[in-house]
Length: 147
Image 1 (cartoon, rainbow, N blue to C red):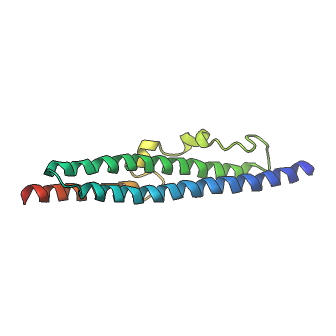
Image 2 (image 1 turned 90 degrees about the horizontal axis):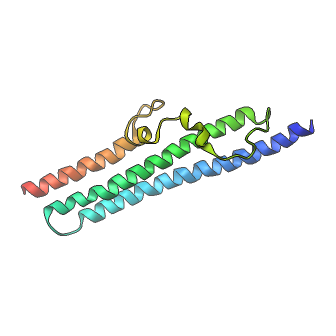
Image 3 (image 1 turned 180 degrees about the vertical axis):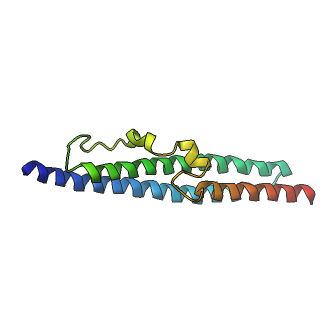
């Protein structure tokens, strides 16, 4: 009975740690989106030749990849959370092991998470956000060229 009580304590601590990690990943993703928009707009405000507008794709692509990475990480930690909730009271295997990479095979790959619609989602959220910003950059570039 004492082992079961000890495992309950570990369960609570592990769940708390994993929730903090997931919250931090979500905050990182939110901040990255804000920085991406800020830097894209900042590069569009640079004065120079018309081709300089294309520099706006650099922060767009870099932050898109970074945002996809954090979303991929968050999904692995959600799988870890589910595993801990389901199995902790039965075993002390992987006790306080926060390595979520063992669940990489259970979630979409980093590139799929970044650029395409994930299998378990209805909407490709990152593609919609960053793709629409990319389209707006292209439209702005075309307006500059033809005016």
